[in-house]
Length: 231
Image (cartoon, rainbow, N blue to C red; front, side, top):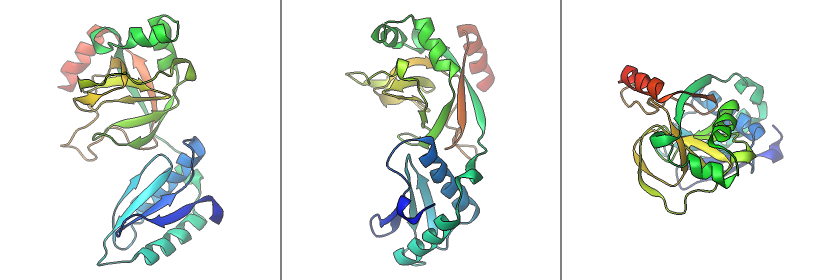
């Protein structure tokens, strides 16, 4: 990476922010993931944790064990030798989704918004491949990039107080999955029977940053069978 293509700055008194780009795009995410993988395998002295985001990585450190300048210097050495090709291999995960009806109450709205049939929205949504750019908002909530512009839809004017876990939504040019019951304003078009947040497992999140996602339409009967199997 060229020295001028990233920026390292303090974030409070015990964190460093590594800005690896200013646009949400696969190339920038490749650098975010490469640095994340390196930190997984080679934790820096004094590192408490790191937090990957769309275009940056925040590294939290212990003030009693290291300093900002030491962390900054080490990150500069790492970035000078890092390559996004090291992060090229990504896990592929298929997410079964029951679209429409009680599982996707906003599917009809999304279809009307784009002057198409609900079945066409389902086809477009399920034929693409998505990338998990980051986990946030709620434990295990994946922000997925790659939604076709043809079905990009604004958030709801009035958020719902409770969206069931597993709900698949659209907000602008992103799609995502609610891992737990929570409030939210995304347009809900379907629901998966899979548990995205499993606190008793390690890691607790089913999906990880960098995963490639495909959605597989399933029927209500198949959804019920999945729910029984998942428990």
